[in-house]
Length: 448
Image 1 (spheres, rainbow, N blue to C red):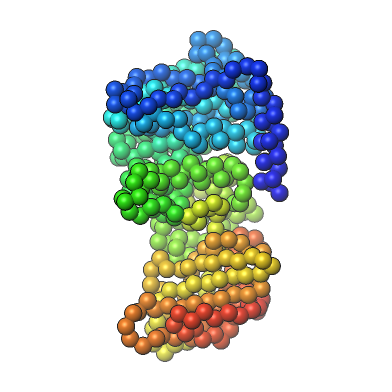
Image 2 (cartoon, rainbow, N blue to C red):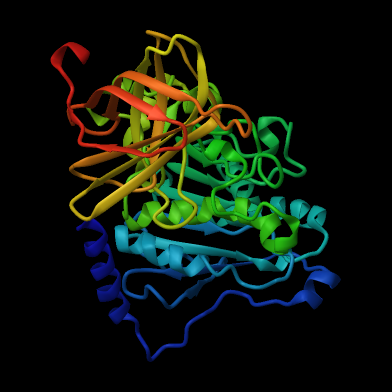
């Protein structure tokens, strides 16, 4: 329902464009410019609900021609090795406007970002930040509240946001860093990269920590989808071409865009490491009160007070490889009574009312001991509101040798979001690679 309302809102406001006035557009450069190299020339393009698809260039030298009683969002792109305009930029501006009535300013620093020499673009981030800082100070002089400013920076744009915030002594309301650039910034002190002191609230997403992004936490909350490195659905081989290099990095943008659309909620869980998260050792959300664990993305600011109080920065979640990216989280507890220790993997399928979902728990070989409960994190690729049937498959992943069996004394499945009563099955025999289907029953009270 919420997604439908957003869509209708976007469609309605798109009808308000003043078609009689020419629009200012993002600078479109080419490979020639990248080879020659470009110098900094910052252009600010204003989008509003009155003109959601038509940018109006804002002059730097005059009072801002914008409604300064409204909050303002700045969207700042990153390195542009070919000079082409980012395809996600204007859609993201439109999604922000569909969510809230505010000024959206696209920071076009394509002249400065377009270079085959990445290091030159890095140097240009400081001049770009100085230009933007001067403009925001002009906004403040004419009545704008710095606390109502939200900066969304992608890659190098994340660090530009940080430099601006630092110059304004951390008074900006919020900075969102989408996979802040790693090369030339890893290991740098806080003053030389995005840092949690740069705004009143800093949220960061890490999707390429082993290549183009940064591994270390930078904000008040740092999200690490799929552990922060290899993203589901992205190419695993260099034979895939340029997508192999940029897919993980760009996933931060598409995840954030989906959070704006309100398609579904992605809950993130505080944990010291990704492995502990996968082992279901970080599923307790009681520290956040009735709100539960934070929702990733645009709406995480609703958890600001709790996050500032708790101080924990690393939060993990897994995603699907394609839209919708969100998964449904369950805690799975299995108690077995095999005489010998068994090792293997578990796959579970849920179905009911024309819905189905699947979870494969294979991040490591699982250990099943007699009368010892094994706790697992089961993340399903969809949601089944009312589970009518459940299928379970056990695999030891042993190619040669006898087929193994897993004798289950009790299987218990508990949804992590919501208050649904856990589902159970008792006395179950799982044969190697044979799918067993059954109707689960509500767990007995003694098993809560």
